[in-house]
Structures are given as C-alpha cells and as structure tokens.
Amino acid sequence: MKMIAVFSLKDRLKHIGHLDLMRAMQRALRRSGLPVSYSQGFNPHILLSFAAPLSVGMEGEREVMEVPLSAPVSPEEFIRRINEALPPLVRCLSARQVEDSHPAPMSQLGAAQFDITPRESAEALLAAVPGFLAQESIPAMRKSKKGMVPVDLRPLIYNLRVQGGRLEALLALHPSGTCKPDLMMQALSEFAGLPEPALYDICRTALLTERFAPLEDA
Image 1 (cartoon, rainbow, N blue to C red):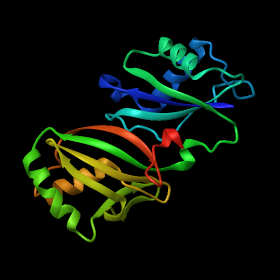
Image 2: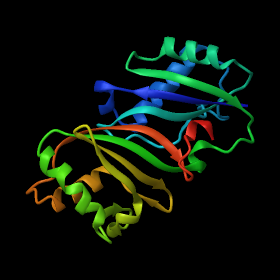
Image 3: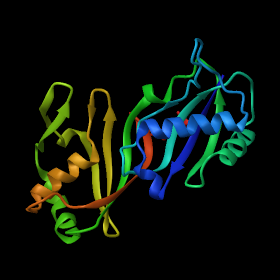
C-alpha cells in the first residue's frame, strides 16, 4: 500500500533545490514515526517519489508525492503527523491510501497549470499574448543532454490567458514533450519586443493528467 499526498511549498522555501526538498521530506517522514517503507541494503532510505520536480524559485500549491507504506494509516493521521514534522512553509494538504498496483503519479502526468505575475514590463507582456498565441510556430532552443536543441513551443502551450494582471498558463509536462514556463516567458518577452527576458514570480498551481484531470485524484 502507499499514500498519494498533496503538499504546498511557499515563500522563501521556493529557493531550495529538488534534492534538498526530497531530503527534507524524508527527514520529516522519519521524525513523524509514520509506517513508511525503506529500501533494502546498507543504506536504507525512504522510497519517496515526487510526481514532478519543482524548479528553483517556483512555488507549488498542490504538489503530488507518493509514499510507500509498511502498514495502513488513515489519511487524517498521515496529514497530522507529517505536518507536525515539516517546516511551516511546507504543508501536507490532503492524502489518500491506494494499493501498490495503483499507477505512480509520475506515469500519469500530462500537464501543469501555472500562475505567472510579471514584475516588470507587465503591460507589454500581457498585450502581446493574443498575437503570441496566434503564431503557427514558436521556435525556441532548449537545453538537453546533447546540448542546445530546437523545439517548437506552440503545440506544448495548451492555454495562455491574461487574468487580473497576471498570466495563467497550461503547459505540457510529459516525457514526449514539455514546455517549461521560463522558456515560454523568454519567447513571450522576445515577441513583445523586450530587450531582455522580463522578470516574474511563478507558482505551479496544479498538476494534471493527459486528460487535464487533477493528478492527485487519478
């Protein structure tokens, strides 16, 4: 059995890296005394997995993790005990217990929703959105293991709209194609005629399946 848990990460903790967040969550699980499963061997560790790493500098409202269990525990008890062990800026929001045969959240991931708030050049960026989306192709260069490779962002931007002085973006997040929000914002800044990419604050508000259903419920 395993627990599918949803957590948030806010404020200054957005600046810690993925591995540091993983270690912090593992420490909290150990301190909580919850019946979690450990790996075998000379250096046992908790078999914890996140659906998708958060980029440094990005807040997360509903991040999804999978925690294998060695014994049953109620979602309410899981939430209470892990929150007692976590720092205040990381909160477990919900949890549900599933069987070991349940697909891993990472394998069902298809898209992510982002809130992006420009810190400069907001008027130019927001005004450029309709024309930006009207393009048949949005070429960009993406860093890969083989170096910089060309990519067309347009089919990977499922939706982009202006909402109350900020941008709401629905972007592909899948092994076959991913649009990182910083790459999209760089392309949007260039399209808007800005000499440098605009600065912005960003929060990942939801992880979704390929059918755009909440990943936490899949």
